[in-house]
Length: 295
Image (cartoon, rainbow, N blue to C red; front, side, top):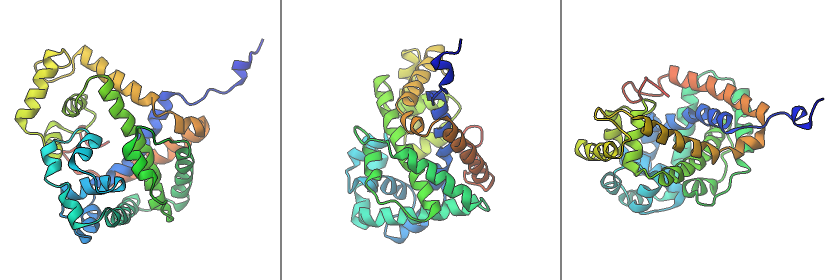
């Protein structure tokens, strides 16, 4: 006898939603490694380097303090943030930075997508814009700031904005998961690096502003708690901890793809993975930054 459950197609679970989030991530993160970021944000008055990153990502929240940036970005050294914020707001207004960031993101993604069919860009943008309609701002400050911005009209920048909304919404949830499982910003960075799926240790220290001594202190604390071994590798308990963090993050970021359903979510994965391969093939990420070569 066929039951009602057997006649009902399975919905989107956390694993499929996580696949979709991972597939679209490079469409956003490529921007942080692109020459267009400095080019356009320096043109409105900012200084090249870390300032364009901090100001660009924080600007949708307004002229926020270094404490707010440190809290919402989570794994950056406070001293590094304080070197650039709030000075950045004396050089350019948040509104100027937001406009320049959209221009730079659209330019970098256009360059890296190469000859990707416009129809694919429009289709993925439509799917992700639909997924964004169910996102809520409660306890998601970076998402909320970006969600208040007007949607771009050109297809490439619209796609980047949709990816960014989903990425920041998931990221805000990830910080909740890290807090729930007792990992500070630096400890989160150390343990994620130890998984071998993110930054190399050298790149993590350099880009996040932590000294080798600070990194070592965090490692020692994680060793004492049984999450790392003496060589800096994840222990069984550490692997379980990272797994629990990712599981909680996945659970809190299912809703937009539940809204799309399985068929459309699988289409998101297909389209985004193809575009990500093109980005990587066109040099989106410099050598030696990400463990294993690229995302």
